[in-house]
Image (tube, rainbow, N blue to C red; front, side):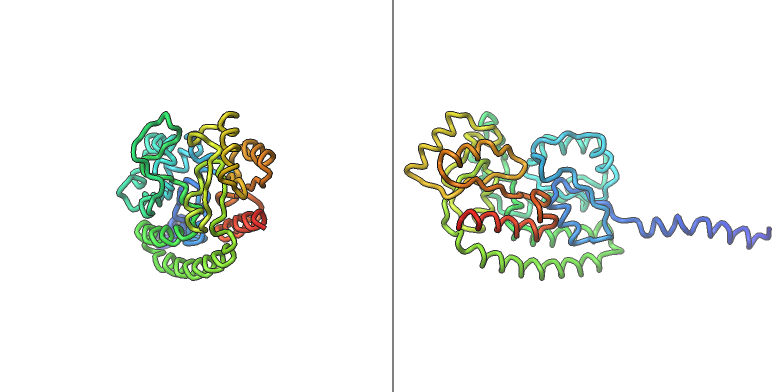
Length: 303
């Protein structure tokens, strides 16, 4: 074989590997399903997206199992809620995954809560009071307006991590923003009958939803965040409804429904399951479905 033929053969052998590297998808590690869905809107097929949790898991209580560590170690960008929602397991991934690309202050580390005006920031900290979050209530995904802020920042971070696809991320961001603005306008029109409606929360997981829609929380089934309510506390809430009636009880798809169902039976008001995040109920396979189904549930109970 001549020298030119030999070099040509080597080039052909190397070509598939080079093409594979050139086309390799940017790997995104999303702590919660809503951020995985948002990444899909902004990156599409240019991204390989891994969601660390599902809609039927409590995001506070996840184990840093080997599959999560492996996905974390390979990722180019992390997007999580932050505000200590993942405090029970994300630090363990940082230690065991040892990924220099995913470090606070790096382009590959994005905590959406850092972009949001947080509600329910505690005046003092006492862990005896349950799952207290020093930075405020972390359940920011129940207000669709937050996804506009998150999408803008995510597109910018992806362009930094993967500059070759920057134009794609910008174009997909603009398309998402257009569709999302239109959807929010439609949802707010549909939700007008909910404004001022008094409700009970199973867990303090909906303050951003309440602020967006104008719902009024009159009681919470949990006496302390994250701790199942006692029979005595449920009775106290029930007695309180005599002076401050509620129209419905809201709980998330991942939560134990029994306290809400007990209250519904004794108070004579509906217990309403909300998807809470992408995948929580039928029809919530993407972000648009998440809020469509949420409003469907609320409006059906309000009628």
